[in-house]
Image (tube, rainbow, N blue to C red; front, side, top):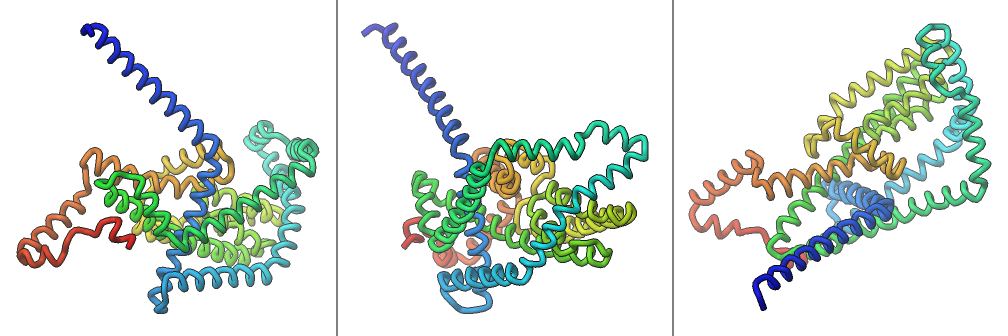
Length: 385
C-alpha cells in the first residue's frame, strides 16, 4: 500500500471521527433540551432529599438513633407540622386569598388613578396595557384552553409534585446506593476525586437549604408582623407569600411586595410608601445578616450570574426554572471551582495548600508511626462495604 493511500485513509478516518463527534454532540444537546423538565424534577427531588438528610443529621446531635429512624422522625414531624399549619391556617388564608383576588384590581385602578395625576405617571401609564385589556387576554386564553387544558395543567403539576416527593424519599432513604452508583461510572483513578466533588456539592446544598428555610421563616414572620402593625389587610396571607417567594432571589421580594403595596394603596398612598419601606427594611436585614451566615457554609454567588441564570431558565422552562436557578448555579460554581480551576488548571486554593503542607509537616515531625496511623482515605469499594 502506497504512502498516499495510507494518508488518505488516515484523513478519512479523522473526518469520520469529527463528524461522529459533532453528531453525538448535537444528539446530546437535543436530548438535554427535550428532557430538561425531567432533569429539573430530579434535581428538585435531590434538593428535597438533601434537606431531609440535613435535618436528620442535625437531629443526630439531639437523639441517638440510626440514620433511617432519624429520617422517619424528621419526615413525620414535617408532615405533622404541615398538616397542623394547613388545618389552622387554611380557612383564614383561603378567605384572605379570595379577598385579595377581589381587592387587587381595585387597588391597581386606584394606584393608576393616583399616578395619572402627574406628568411622568401619564407617560408610564400610556406605555402600559390597560387592566381591561389584560383581563380580556386572560379571559380569551381561558376560553381557548378550556376546562381540559386547565385540568391537564393542574393534573400535571400535582403529578410532578408527588413524583418529586416520592423520588426525594427514595434518595434520602438510600443515598449511598445512588451516589456510589454514579461514582462507579468514572474510571477508578478518578473515583475518589469524584466522591469529593459529589460530597462537597451535597454539603453545600444541605447547608444552603437549611439556611434558606430559616431565611424564609424569618422573612415571613417579620413581614406578617410588620404588616399587622401597619394595619394592612390580609397581613397573614401577604406574610406567607413573602416567605415563600423569598426562596427566589432578586425577583421573589419584588413579586411579594407588589400585592402588599397595592392593597395598602386602597387606604392611602402614604400607607403604600410605609409598606414599601417595610419590605426594603426586611430585605436589608435578610441580605446583611441572614445571607452572610448562609454563605459561610456554602458558596458565594455573584448577583449578575444569579440574575442571568434565572432569566435563562425562566425563558427555557418557566416557573420551575426561575425557582431552581439559584441552587443549580451553586452546583455549577462548585463544579467549576473543583473540577476546572483546581483539577484542570491546577490552581488550588491557598488554604488547601497551606493545610496540606501543615498536615505533611505534622506527619513528618511525628515520624512514620503518624503516617501509618493516618493512611490515605479508603477506596470507594471499602466505603460501600
